[in-house]
Amino acid sequence: MKNIQEDIKTGNFKQVYLLFGEEAYLKQQYKQKLVDALNPDGDTMNFSRYEGKGIEVKGIIDLCETMPFFADRRVILLEDTGFFKNKCEELADYMKELPDYMVLIFAESEVDKRSRMYKTVKSAGRAVEFARQDEKMLMRWAAGVLAKEGKKITQRDMELLLAKTGTDMGNLRMELEKLITYTWGREVVTSGDIEEVCTTQTQNKIFDMVRAVTEKNQKKALDLYYDLLTLKEPPMRILFLLAKQYRQMFLAKQLSVEGASQNEIMSRLGVPAFAVRNILSCARAYSLQELEEAVRDFVDAEEAVKTGRLGDVLSVELLIIKYSTAKKKTVT
Image: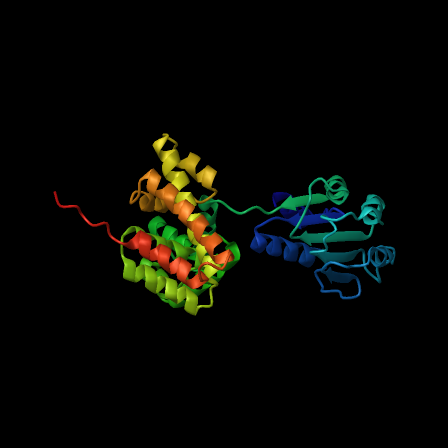
């Protein structure tokens, strides 16, 4: 990313750029920055955009061979072409000898780093991967967005915001805009503001449901489940996300028992630090054996649904009831 910023600042552009990776928001931002810098006047004569699979390579090469019309360069933007997953030998060969006036920008969702296309771009230009950002970076970025609007937020409330919105930067940006508008005239963004206007992502609603289950709050857990069904969330997706949460609790507890640090658990689970704390908090309600049994139960429930022995809605409901039912104390 710094290399792209430097290219834009100096005006010394490469002839080929490949932008790829899971972080769609950053990829979109840098794609637009490149396009704006390379085509500042919005010149439609010398800028072309192609999207999707099935693009004819010969047509792209023919366009590259067409001299720009009263301009220094011709720019072609290609998005989600599939050229970096499937063989595209002709274009890979051609990119080694692009005309001096030509700049190609690829923005791809799927990239095989072993492909000739990837290796050619890396050799002839810049291949930039936009990975999911870690918790600290997201917090700094979100705090910076708020600071530009003259607003402050505590770390605890920032963690609440990320817990509700998830770590997708595009979604987080939309939620920040809602908070900025909602808190107009005030300096501090509070937890109350976040609870009032921010939309909880499905996966985080699932975690709220898991927490209600671990707290043996059966009514709340079932209400959250029915809310998800009302929002047209497929029961099998809910089952999948529930199973994922219990697998994470099992693994987190197992690692914790073995003496692993929070950072080690965070790395193994691939989740932010605040999520590890929440997962471990919920896992305390169970023994390792109980969590292992829960993981097996979710696998069995999925199998029962797939074989028609149990309805999808009922399968999730029964699991919620089983694990949110308070254990009866034995009288001796």
